[in-house]
Length: 344
Image (tube, rainbow, N blue to C red; front, side):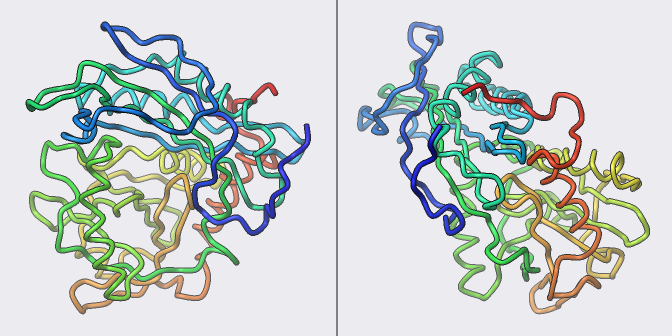
């Protein structure tokens, strides 16, 4: 199979239209079997449920070319589970795991020429999503829905390596108590846009959100979970009912324990202990970057610098990131079931 003629090593993290996308429709109380299509345009009513009441959920995952030339995806079954949970929370009829996995396989296979070559640092990003498509003027769930998944080649999230960033403690709340913080709904990301634009204007790379009830405990950022290490072999993971269950974070926790011999502690983490110097390294984790190191946290002018510094990612976060990316790229042996090969 001949690859597309792209400058793979200089791709950005942005949308590029590819050849195929998968589309399935929910009408008359059931999902159809779905199929690959060429058309990237969506036609719907001006009164579609997604436009009026933000009834949409989504996922994000990647396909990779491994060192031995295979095309694989990473733990898509967990994306299927999380999309199901998100859909149920927004009264969207969930698609089956079988349909989800079929759509991933077909979309990657249909765009195999767009999967970046091994060693370029680029990957094929996949975006599955479901949205209410029929007209809805009263406040209620839509009757009809569309599920789509498209693929786009993206460059590495960090050009020239992952450099530590400076983040601020946000004045805004990411989620309400008993709200939608633990699902991947479009509305969660819409509310974070003003906060991130504000942070950027103030010179910060991201926001750290505190728990909405007491505003004393670390939750996550606008698009990533947070992990800490104490420099003594322990990985500390903030625990909360309003944190999105990141697949990357869950995978890093497994890697830390089973590959790196670390002790795992999932618990509530207070801002006070972070600013008091209890941890030596901190990282944001998600599909796009795997781990983004935090060098400093600014809490309304009071700044704390992690011992790992502002020059390079700390040694523990580096080891975790290199091990997980090695699993994804086929250079490190993967746990059973983590890697799904795509037939092309």
